[in-house]
Image (cartoon, rainbow, N blue to C red; front, side, top):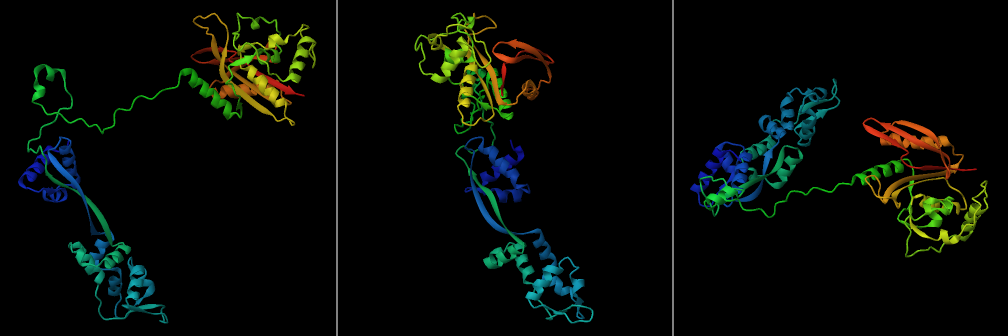
Length: 441
């Protein structure tokens, strides 16, 4: 709320006139800053239709600081002329004056002075006329007195180019009486309280109109689920390390890609209905790369590539069964097969973070689905040290620096190890995710 005294004074001035008052003139009469009157106008507008305020703008010319100095002391060229005595003045001495450089060129243009370049002591300035008329100063004095309208636009623009004049836009309010005009300020109520309703006082009170154009309180924005937040953080780390994300939008996989291509035997307990969700419709998959299927079948049943195999009768019927994928490694198997089809091998780094499904007994710590993080690096000459370096860098970016690597045996990855990490205030994390190291010889 603006100063109450200024508001009441403004209302009394409006009351005495019929058509209205100008805020700028009112500020000059009251000898206060114009913004004080503007604040009073805004406060009265907030009270309803007490006043009517129309915003007006006008332009006028004002002297700049340099213009004020020129109006007081004369133009640069006139001051140069006055500085040159009858016997003349060395040009070097004239240029030392603050107004010398600008005034010299203007005075030469007006033919008020002349230069004797052949003088014994060097170039010397002499007066070329006896008297001068400082029209620049006279024009500035006219503007200063409020008679800028007597000057032509060309003259004003010339003074503006010399940075002696500036055109100023002034905004003011034309203030008149509103439909609810009153010299008494009554604060409008903004809330209808239970007490007002109970005692009936609301009937005598004035309420501030509801502003339907006002912006409402911004609703709280959504937030990432904690799991999604962690997933986003992990994903960003992998991308920073140069990994490419694998497509993991196929929750349904055939047993071939989920188990057989990873050389998990068909009689393995994990392939039982107690551990895996099998689909009834469609129950079977039919499209497989036949040459690759035959090689996988041979390794299972007979061995090959340095493996003795499992020595059993491998069945295509088991490989065709559709399931909800039990791990994202099925996606890795597809990507590695696709990589092997290239004419020229190129090193790759893949990762994935997505849901997998297990037929678990539900309890406080087990669900039928969970998220798995997986990575695959394929290149020539990789060692276990490369794998440890990648894991170490990943945890460093995660903010965990205390790591311990322990050799471990996994029949489907060799060599294998487990990663232990320690963080102050958090329980130790054991074997956070499997990470496969592949070496091409």
